Length: 399
Length: 103
Image (cartoon, rainbow over all chains, first blue to last red; front, side, top):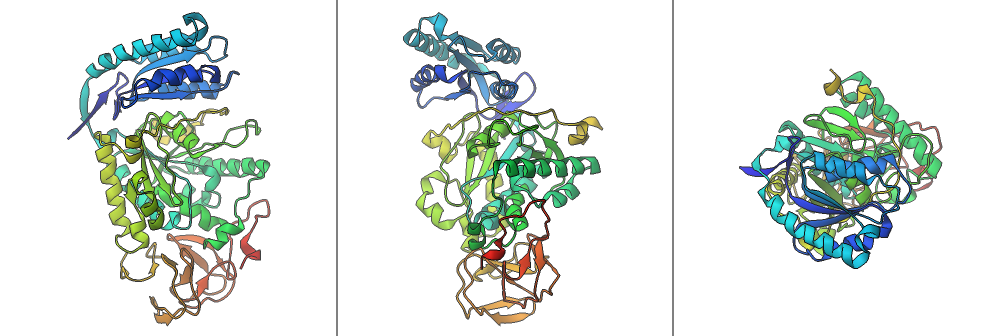
């Protein structure tokens, strides 16, 4: 049996991390200096760089700082930025977590703020050691999946194996999230048929059409010559290669970043902003996608890579599934699972899927992933804007 | 997956009419298809597809058990399935950078 940390809202964490969150780029350095002192301990840096207000960023920061893997939060503010620090700090306090906000302009500058921050963290590390532990099951977990640094192997080894793991985890009662509607163009009809209600199916179709319009505006090519050289014949085939990460369960809901799945099942996350194109690309890097799934409660992320990404993440561990056997050998220290075995015929998709499922359980129980061991704690949060989801998107909640 | 592990091709779904190369497969390699053993008439690069049974022009091409396009010519078992004999069935509102120009 494994155990997690019980939070006041009933959710359970698989880690008990202290976050140091800067609320504008001007406070980034001070925040990172505070964290440096605690290398090797579970103290992590996150933050939002912008000085101008953004509702999405506020909501994301609130969700991230009340994530079940988080035990306490230190906010670092310059003082004159627009971020509503009182609101986010109140939300963390209301969740029962220790929280402190340091304002550099009031605390006496860089040195004084660093010292105050480090002193607070030393005491809070002892305090959060006392958070209750509770039995943890797969049905308590939210699991996300992304692919990045893809190549011709991603769609035939790593992604199908991740899909098998998702089928197992959903059957066990976990909530599993897949995303990037912009890479699912051509899959919308198949996805809509998997929806638990026709209304949800319609919402899924519309989300993919929105992504298509958005990427058209950005001039983002969907199918390039390199894809054909890699063996992909059509846009549907390319999209399906990413889509197979979702497995074959019914789709229980369509959520947006920060919406927490109300129960177990498979969820599609719509990551493309609503309204006019305002802030550029929906997600500027893989970690931006990972952060959005964490804001929706993901305890960990399955990351399928062919060419070889090395990233991890703040807050929630990343399990890296390497689709390409040559990449696996080259980047062995960074990879958790060798799905390249499927390419070389050593193991089947089912066997690798089972290894991933077992690793999810072990990581939930405290085993560190490769990127955690190496100290990777990447984090990025940028500007976006969303409308709330409609009632058709979560049929089980509104039934 | 039921095929021999030594085979250079893998079937991703039982319904598929295509097989995917997991390694570069040399010209002349003998392959067991649904319709008996055939020899590859050309080298098939990793991640490319061949037909595992006769696909008629107009038939849906299946990979992952799902449609990836429509055959634009009759395709024999063991034959390369790619942009020269498959077109997208998807009709987006813009012209894609389609693979028609790439052989």
